[in-house]
Amino acid sequence: MWVRISGHFFAPVTSLPLSRLLPSSPDPASIAGNILVLLWLRALGSSFLFYAK
Image (cartoon, rainbow, N blue to C red; front, side):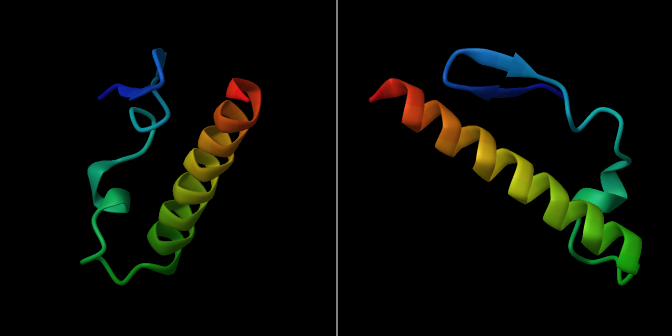
């Protein structure tokens, strides 16, 4: 699965199992992985917005 952010292609989700991306699993490791992915995407988006200015 590819994630496209402002024209750039990344594959951060391919190394993670799909169960980590689903909030239905109560596993603490999956929750931590989900939060890390969200923070990574947020930092990536904010850096792109910063460079766009």
